[in-house]
Image (cartoon, rainbow, N blue to C red; front, side, top):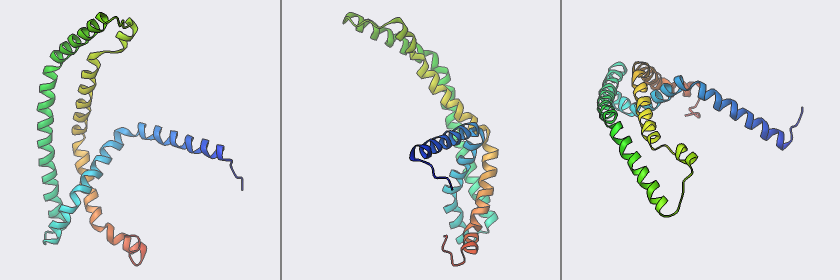
Length: 178
């Protein structure tokens, strides 16, 4: 068996991390909805369990939980949608205000003898912050377009989560894995 030096191991680990990160970046369109559905399922599972303990069958408990998730998601979508609409209507005004403040800052610095190079002025773009916030809100909107896929995964995860403890006990024998 070939033993690697410490430097070789570090290079192999670094290369593996680069490959993993690149893979995650490429898988982001699938990974983000999956992780969101896992998150929703994890926070919904205690409610589903308590409904089952109160005598509600698993199928009905899942329907109730999914209905609550849909209602909360719809409320969140309405809230974000109205905020996005209001923000998109106000973007030109914000850009003008930021540009005016930027020019006032440059004049104030100039009056103090501090000269900002033209290249730096071009790099620092006050409108870029507003555009960045707008892109974040649009990305949130794209998550909402995947809502059916996310809900489908949540249903599947909740159905599987109910029997997961039993599966771990079956695998581990005495329940040592649980």
